[in-house]
Image (cartoon, rainbow, N blue to C red; front, top):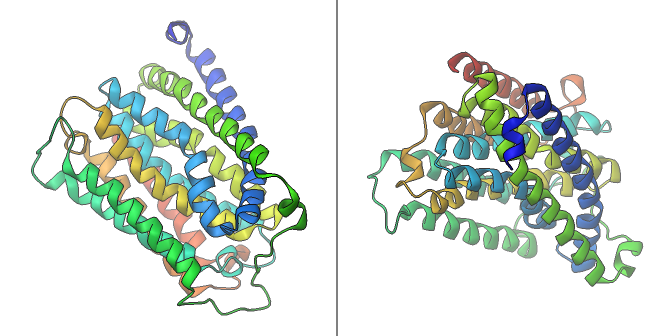
Length: 344
């Protein structure tokens, strides 16, 4: 895409905005299909949000990270992945604001979302530890990458068991939204739903491929640097599907899908690091990332811990009709942005 290199700052910003709009529109449509698939397949909103919606809305981001790693840009690859986790957690706070009846984490009670949050904390902790272990690679791949993918697969099995076995159950209140399959969704044939889902997911992946080139050029033109661009620009843009799908799910009444889509997308985003390590040919990508990106790893871990506390506490009402966890997450993210820009 040599034409992007010839565009000025205004042209690249306009192209960036266009890609963001495409991602937002496609993400909205994906929400409806994912909700129908949750009912039609019997997966349930929380699991469908974590696995289907979370993975599909993350495709554009994983393309950015892998493409950047292939080009020898580990800072952009890792900051995009981990910056996305942080901003997507903030988007859950936005969805909490949209849902006016009660705190979203109270109404969308789900043991699967609790398990998914615990899995995310484990994956983030692993990513935070790896830079401090020996820089050993096998065929250019660090052993932590294998552990990351295996841990994710095992974690999904635990999440599914949590949903199916129901060893724990949230206490129902007047504001708890119980999941009930819709008759219209149950009547829809599976094949068109899966085909539509795959096509829209592919569009998100293609948008991420273009976005990586635009983001790299913007980093050069603005002087922000790869890490700041990855955290502030590409992470926010590639995370727009999570924002759009969460808000759309809340308005549709699929509250567990909204929460599960964010948490599941964050867990899937941790795999960006493993995919980037596979694509990066100059050794272990975990040992090539700057301290600023390590800050976002730790910050994402802290934000997830706060979110898990909110999911367990299930506060009905809070300041501004949102839970304490949503307010705290927003403050933590703003602090992280300030630190990143100041260090750029």
